[in-house]
Image 1 (cartoon, protein in one colour):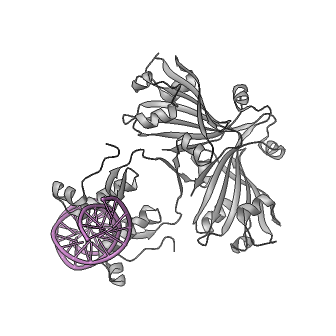
Image 2 (cartoon, protein in one colour):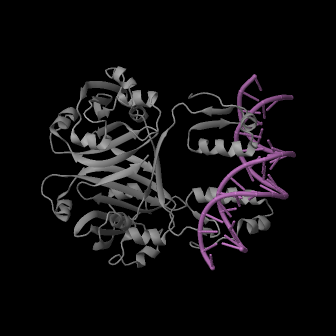
Image 3 (cartoon, protein in one colour):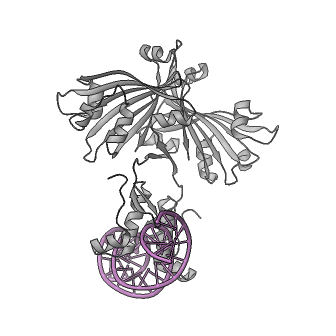
Length: 209
Length: 209
DNA sequence: GAGTGGTCTAGACCACTGT
DNA sequence: CAGTGGTCTAGACCACTCC
């Protein structure tokens, strides 16, 4: 019946012997699942090609590693205030000429490097981050615990390992690495942080549909 | 105030001078967004670490190409009934010893190959597919239009281009390709189809949060 | 057992939109 | 303008769960 028009709420209420409010809630919830389209005056229609929606939780890296049965460890690399390169400026659009906090770190699963975290934080927007000590706690974890989450975007891609990445992952041959770049902004739509996560060779991101 | 307990619905209704039903709907919708936890007798509590959920629509490849402003074209490569290799058998778990429909095809954006589609279909479960002619219509599109969608999973990874992929994408140097592997099953949880989509160099999958 | 959210009813008015 | 869904109210009863 894709494309078909359903009876009005009042008619369905009569047919099922219940209140229109109840019919409304039922249809609303189906519509929220993307299977019905509703318009005032236009009635309720069965969607022709329901969108195939995928959703997944973005786990803390620590949890992702532990849920795979490995021991988690964090390894700090560096933390500096720097003028961001053009690519980061374009992504984060910080105030002109300011320096941002740049943190590099590793997340280990057992003895192996699981993911490389390369993060920029705009301390004009998150001043607390300037005081944080990322030698002991990962920026990933610190931000989740300290900064309310509001929105952002995620970009997934494949990249060839750079020399630095090859050495961190202890590999030689040219290798494809799964890369996630995430931007997080606050409620005023200012970008708090941008992070590039480069996963170990063979990593797969699994998503239910 | 993560962790805090909110007043009861009745109290909030009194405070805001509205009906409890209205408060209930409001809190429900916030709870649906994952920001509140509600329990009978236990009250309504602000969730401590709201899960960072991402959700996105999986577009038809055709739509994805056209929405980027390119002309879509489909190019058939091959279509055979074959005994599936071990990896596919493990994924799809078809009846013992049967042959599956194996289709390879390209989706072009303008003149360029955008994605390579390599698909296996279990015709024991979707007999209609045996009659379909994938020389003209892509399996991707045919399945969306003919087979009701029920569920599945999606696995994203990065892989080094094989020789065949290099030649299809007209590239030489070792290159990392973004790869999506999707499995789709029917309402009885039998696997209808498994597909490997290998995207052109530089492809990024963008997801809103 | 008592307090909380979950869900229903019957009725009302409003907001949008197709004709 | 008329018909549809969107949303509210006031009240009721139920289901779960903590004490």
